[in-house]
Length: 332
Image (cartoon, rainbow, N blue to C red; front, side):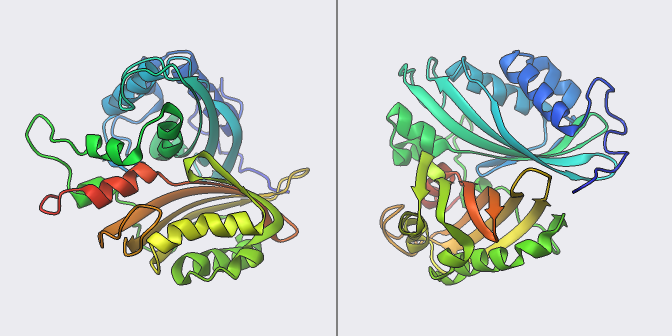
């Protein structure tokens, strides 16, 4: 059993009982309670927010983005499936997996309203101290949203790349959030127990070694995969990851952050933040090979039973991949 340091909530409002209560309460009050001005209270003014398509350091941008999402999906609910925590004394690091049912009722980045029901997952990793989020990494399954509202991801990426008011458009470098981090990955918990799984995951991505599937996953594993897909069992998991690795083969997989929780009454739970650098040199998943450099930015949650992953939630933003493929070569 893990015990949390006593100073975990040092500097936080005493109204928050513990880290999970803090994350749940501020999420509900900002989003479902429409408390957008509260973002200034709970985000540092210069908080870096990194997504697969952007990196911002301005709290006003967080407010603007939240408002835009609510305008398009005003009935969005944020249902916490899990919060995987690690101490960062003083303060803590949280990896928050959210399931959101919502309806496309307003205009926005996904086009005019369609009235279609949407279900989507997001994972938000937050470093929190002194009653504020001071750093955030966020991946939303935009491919799942696009498919459910009837949009083609290629067209959506082209729309994203349209020239702005200054006449310019983002180049490949401008599209890739700076997820490359120096040094060894930050790790918390009994991560040694996950070593065989992490080795299998790395070999799967870097070597395209699909024999690692049986070493990594339980025979009845369920993978909640990008695009809102679910793969169950070895054959489905193999076919699913093959689609990605055939298009982006033999790249470099890097783990940046790892939490391993061994809490009573629960399976071993892990939260991974990782990147994969490759070249779009294969066909299939993302169309004909473009030979463009691509960076995948991944957030993953695992439930591990008897030394194998039984449930896997992996979020990768497909829209960011298309945007990197299509970005003007002369820009960025």
